[in-house]
Image (cartoon, rainbow, N blue to C red; front, side, top):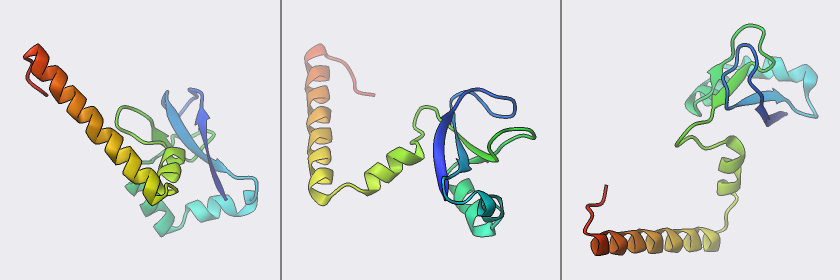
Amino acid sequence: MLEFEPIAPTEGLPMGAVGVAVGSKGGAAFFSYLKQPKVIARLEAEGFERAGRGAPHPWYLRLGPGVVAPGEKALCRALTGEQRARIEANRLAALERRRRLCDVRGEVEA
């Protein structure tokens, strides 16, 4: 029922945002669905903000440092246990490489 799409800067929406738009199956039910208290609570919990008057999308998510787009979250939820383990091993190896590099340079880690 919902689709997430990158949007160009338009009136009522900030630059670098993802808008909540009508999906291919649900034009008629879309706006009534977005008025449900549980849906509003979920959008707000995920960091979405209500768009200004005249905006093409009723809700938007400002993408900035540390903000994960909804599509990326969906991909992460779909990872297998083996993929998660490999990602964690790579993350730990990168942290160890960084620590060694800082030791060589005599820098203090942030």
